[in-house]
Length: 140
Image (cartoon, rainbow, N blue to C red; front, side, top):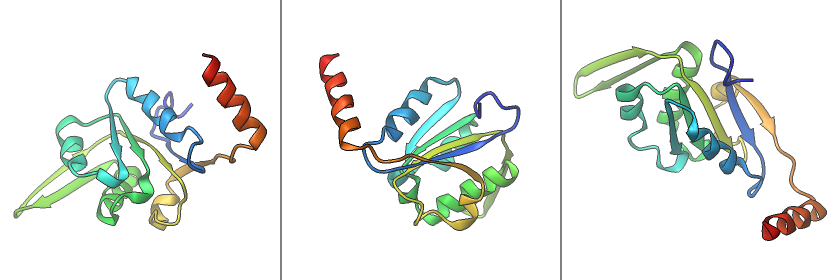
């Protein structure tokens, strides 16, 4: 529903490791004008956003993203405006970008950013569910 919305709705998937968050985010890479980045290695993300203006920004493990990059994202999610000052030069863009992210927990996400996300908390698998999924994957 978020992807089909007229205005950006930012989604944050929160759950334990191995709950398929990354698989879901990676599947969205098939969307036109999407950009995938890992929160722990978001170097170059700002440049890419300015140069390519993606409609969908897909971030795996956003909790590992540096605070300065989270602040940049907060401005994007709040206003659609991104700005950067570098070597005494400034640039600003107005974008309509959906942010879809994943995280194992929300402890390291800056509080204002949390309020901009629709948070979906995934429950851990039970042992029985884990066995069913494992058998199903091994059969296929």
